[in-house]
Image (tube, rainbow, N blue to C red):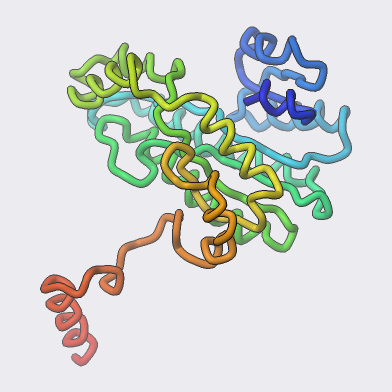
Length: 276
């Protein structure tokens, strides 16, 4: 993503904990700069933002994609400290980046924030509780920020990248089927061999969300590999999408169910309860 955005002419200020990886992704671009930073450490985040501010007066886009699975296995067998550490990185790190980067965003430049959600945000993900909980929280944080920052003219969306063959999955292979679960383990092995989402797809989705093509879209979680974000129909209906509950985290109520026996029984029960 750093290389793709830099190739388009963006000045990219990338941060991560591993200086060697940062050098690898920034060394071939004069407009990409790497800074060693643990996003869950507020002092380091402040220093990173200070370094960015020394090079530019404003920031147009923030992409928060630092994260990991954390402890894998049944919750009762997980290491409590590592479980909480996962929330520190995946959730608190996203919070810290937004908190300290937003002051550098200027309304007239139509700034954008893109946070990475992921597997487990919308469905239960057994044996990956810290990861699933943190990513669900990132979605709700994204939706909350979309409301809070609307007056500042800042759009905030999340992207679910899909199963991309990155080193994050090494944690599942190391945990093995006993901790990851037989199905999750075998699915990971299979998809690493064939069926993984190309890295180019989430990169293209982020580029779309950062661009003017996304219009006023805000408060949504877009699946890079599933939703039809790269179609004329999607762009044509941006206003309707934005005003709907589509691509959001919402409770399913009776009115959302098909008018079958279950809905009828529960609506009758609800009416009876109100009449008491």
